[in-house]
Length: 209
Image (tube, rainbow, N blue to C red; front, side, top):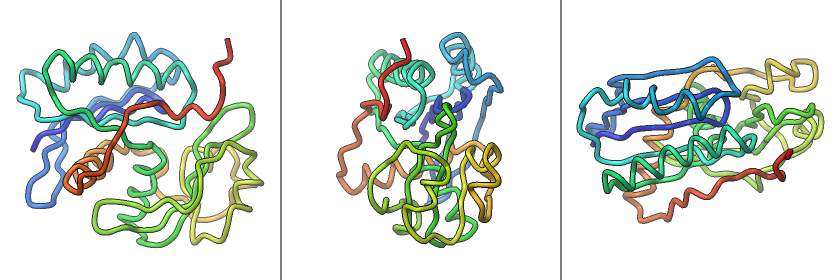
């Protein structure tokens, strides 16, 4: 099973992931550094990642994330899936970030990603099997200090930790690394279980324009 993972919840990131016998391997990957020009970067990055390879499905991060970047990633994924008649699965970027931390710690944690305006997108999680996560409560957009009041956790991870180290105290686990393998693993596991995986964006806020 070869899955293209697309994440535009922060900077643009794409990868071709091969899943075999429960192991995810990155075949090819492109990760950008610009968090504001997703529309211009995603198509060329996708072309480089594919390089003529066969693909079985698309997994795309659905946020929560700022409006423009998230929309660009979802449009790219939907267009490619439609043109090539491929399955398309949506996974929250916070779910994938939580899975990345669980791969190291295996405990209950808080994911807090930058939401701008001195706020974070946050949710609490615990492990669910080898490839999935269980969200404890709702997705939130709130201040870093308020995020820590969502409930007791063993660590904090996500891009918000580097931005607000005084408020988001705790253990940070690879919070800047791509979450592309985790996106593919969660999407495939949920597909196997017959779970619906819509690609509706999780903005949590209205657009700024």
